[in-house]
Length: 313
Image 1 (cartoon, rainbow, N blue to C red):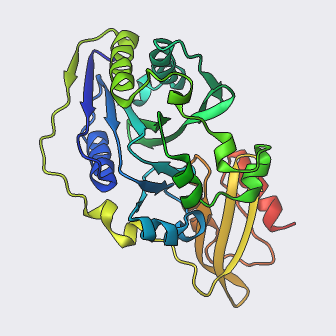
Image 2 (cartoon, one colour):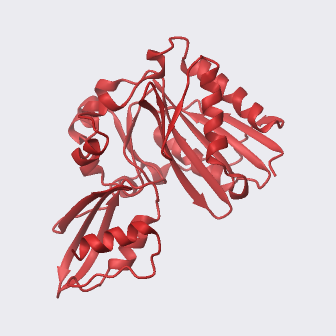
C-alpha cells in the first residue's frame, strides 16, 4: 500500500543525465512509495529501446542544428524533446500500478486549466482529438515505470525535421504528417506553461494518493556513461544483412539477419511496439532457425502469432 509520495524535478536539461536519473530512481524504489519525477531535455530525439537510430531519425539535421540523440529503456516510438516539452515519470510498486489512476493525475492537472483530456488506447492522451502526450512503460522485478511527454509549447517544425516516421504508421492514423497528429497544450490555453503545469501535476499527484509528499533525495553520484555512449545509442547494426519489415495493428517490425546455410543468423529486431521484451524474445527465438520454416512456439502473446504467419506466408 502506498503511504509515502516522493517528488523530484530535475534542473538539468541533459537527456543522458535525466535518463540515468530515471533509471536510478527505478533501482532504488521502495515498496510503499510512489514517485513523480518531472524533467526536460534540450533539443533531443529520444528513440525507443528497440528502435534503429538510422531508420527513425534525420541524423544530418540533428548534427547540423547541434541537437542530441538518446535511447531510453522503454519500448515505443521516437519522440522529440525540447524545452517546450515536460516529461513525467511515475515509479511505483507493481501491486499499486494503475494506468487509469496515473492518467487521472494528468487529466485532473489539466482540468485546472479547463481542458478536457481524451484517453486514446494505452499510450496516448489527446486534446481536441490530437495527441499532446505519448506514454511508454517498463516493468522491473517488483516495480513499474510509466513515463511520457507533455507537449506544452514544443517546436513542431523541429519535430517534423528530425523525425522520420514510418509512412505506414501515419496511414494507420489516417493522417499525412507528424504535425497533423499533434497539438501543443499552450495552443488551447496560454496559461499553461512548464511552471504552471509542473505545479498542477504536483498538486494532482498529492490529491490522487492523499499521502504526505517529500522531495526525493539522490544518495549516489550518477554515472551517465551508459546513456551517453554510442554503443547504447547505436547498439543495433544491420550492415550486410537482409532486411524485411511489416506494420501490424500493435506496431511496426523490422527484422535484419544474415543467411548462413539456410539459417537465420545474427538477428536484429527493431520495433516501436510498447512491449519492450518483444525484440529480445524474437531475437532469441529466431536465431539459428531454418529459414524455410520459422517457429515461435512457446511465445504466447497474440502478436507472435501475427509474426509467425507473416514470416511463413
